[in-house]
Image (cartoon, one colour):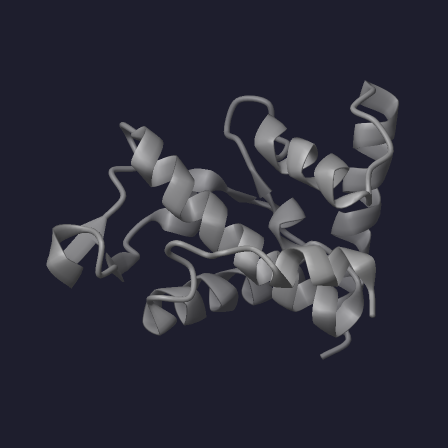
Length: 148
């Protein structure tokens, strides 16, 4: 078995597998962005998505305040993106969350790259290595979604 996929499948997902509707909407947004060869800001991927997570508000509606992200908001969206990357890796060997970037630096968060290093797909966190890896993931995502 693929060791990267094995690591991702071993994750104990706190949120991402608990709300199929939100997961489907985030997946749809990423697929659409990929087909249009577009990157999404974190605020764009999260805006208007209503989460129903059993551990938050007893499963009642929870929406990320995209103008004032909390630590919980970052954890939720990060976990959903990680889960979706597990799916895209399983299907086509790329990390779909590479399509989501910060509005300031216009690249994925440092946590994304740290996780890639932990998974062993990124050998180090040097800027040139990070940028080459990210560029490769974006190209793979665009090619995958445009071919569908």
